[in-house]
Length: 52
Image (cartoon, one colour):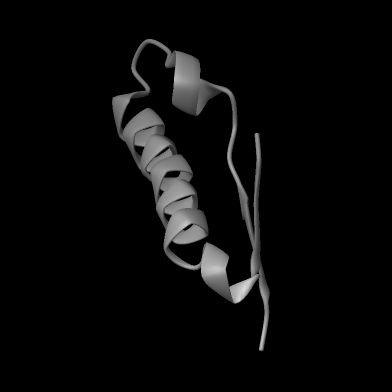
């Protein structure tokens, strides 16, 4: 059984911007979540993609 998870983020999550702390922290959490899921479930051959 396999599946695909696609998360879409932006470069502001990495670089940040003035007044955008809540946005940047939420999006960087999305990036980290995708990386953790990919490592956790890599043995199941699911596909995890992050686009930003």
